[in-house]
Image 1 (cartoon, helix red, strand yellow):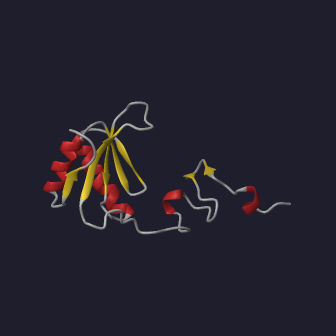
Image 2 (cartoon, rainbow, N blue to C red):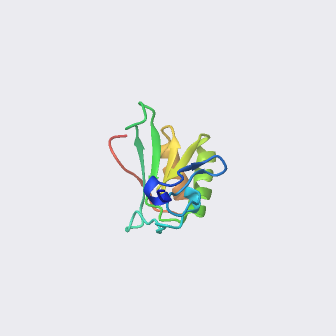
Length: 122
């Protein structure tokens, strides 16, 4: 009989959603490869717009916050409420649905963070 490691282990549970095959905890609670995310060493939050891989739908990306998961989620909720749209947090990057770069930059500056528009032309 094969062990769980050889068969790949549990990757999805109807109770908790996606699970880590190593520790069998929900992905949000996984402790296997837990590292603190600190994308930007210069302390500047970069806000950009991207459509790549989204079937032409634009999203606003907020990178370089360097926050833990819980404060990042709270900030994401505030940003989404300010923009009046949905979004998510993936790998320490806040994704907001739609083109809200100027609104997000203004919000972050109001919060006392150094923020700037990144990427192509306006």
